[in-house]
Amino acid sequence: MLSYQHGYHAGHFADVHKHVALCLALQHLTAKPAPFCVLDTHAGAGHYDLTGARAAKTGEWQGGIGRLWDHAVQSAGLSLYLEQVRKANPDGVAHPRVYPGSPLLALGMARPGDRVVAMELHPAEHAAARRAFKGYANAQLHRRDGFEGVVALVPPPERRGLVLIDPSYELKEDYARVPDCAARILARWRDALIMAWFPILPEARHEALVDAFAGLATAGREVLLDCLYGPPRPRGMGGSGLVVVNPPWHFAERLADAGREAATALFGASGRHEGRLLGTVTEIEA
Image 1 (spheres, rainbow, N blue to C red):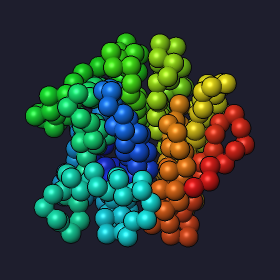
Image 2 (image 1 turned 45 degrees about the vertical axis):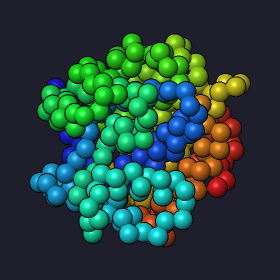
Image 3 (image 1 turned 90 degrees about the vertical axis):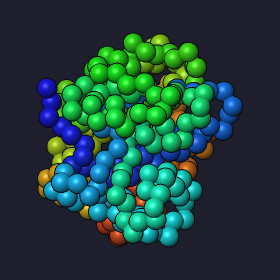
Image 4 (image 1 turned 135 degrees about the vertical axis):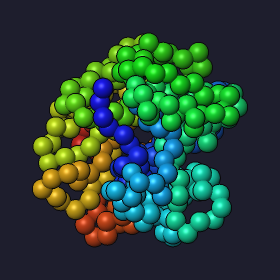
């Protein structure tokens, strides 16, 4: 059993990057009346206590959501994201006490007819997610391997929706399993909106992942690469990456707008955002 528990890292800058993109994608899905389904391969605990011992041990949230909490937001993407995080902190606190994970953000934006299907294999995280999901009639939680589970569950009956592939990358094999999972999803659900997150580390293992996703870019199917970088560092995560297959109309531009603002707000002059379509040299302009 893998040991990763996201409570030590919840709300850090990679969560900001990933969850801004998720909120923008969900906003697109809610713009049409037809119901949709969100499938989350690695759900974690659902939500996280930023005042607890795990968050205090690393303090990583202070360099992520903590820096944005009182930021004078300009972009629509960051504004939407902060609105959702503030829903989890309704008492007007000076800094966030609770951080909603991906499935709780999805449930917060989903309508009664939409569904959120989450998978989590870690027993403690699964138990925490079960508690977090109480009261949500449109939530389903599976204790199973997310890579296997999501392929078995697509296409959903709704035929609209998104898949978030977000492993911990404790295993080096995940860099190959993620694009392979995406390809298997697309073989069953060609129009799936897929978002895959990955860490950017000095070892640069993510480059093979990006190359594999570039192979999925075909006529009629776009694949977006979006990255948020902090200052260079000899070890540890220096950036956050997202690959988005079948991005919605104008999604790339809206994410780029939010990414540029987030880079400055989180890292100052040393922050950087990059977005481009794979298979081309086209950079995304906000």
